Image (cartoon, rainbow, N blue to C red; front, side, top):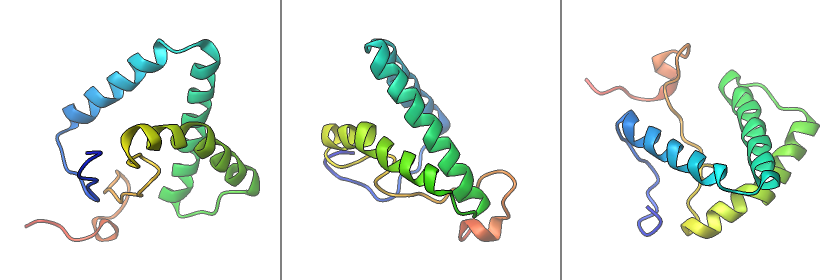
Length: 108
C-alpha cells in the first residue's frame, strides 16, 4: 500500500481486524507514555469522527486536539508508511444509521 498509495481500498472485515490487532500488539510493546499518547489520539479521532458522521462542526478545542494528535501520532505513521495513513485521505463509508443515498452509488 505504501508503494501504490491507493485512494480506495475494499476488503473483507478480517483484513481490518488483523491490521487492528497488529497495531494493538505494537502499542502494547511501547513504553507507557507512548501508549497513553496513542490512546489519547485514538480518542480524539473517535470524537472528531462523530462530528463527521453527524455532520456537525467540532469546537475549537477539538480542532486543536486534532492538530496536536496529527503532529504527535499520525505524522510518524505517515513517515513510516510513505505518506499513507488513516488521516491522509478521508473515506466515506455507508455507516449504520445513514441512508444509502448519502453513501454514494450502490452496486446492483
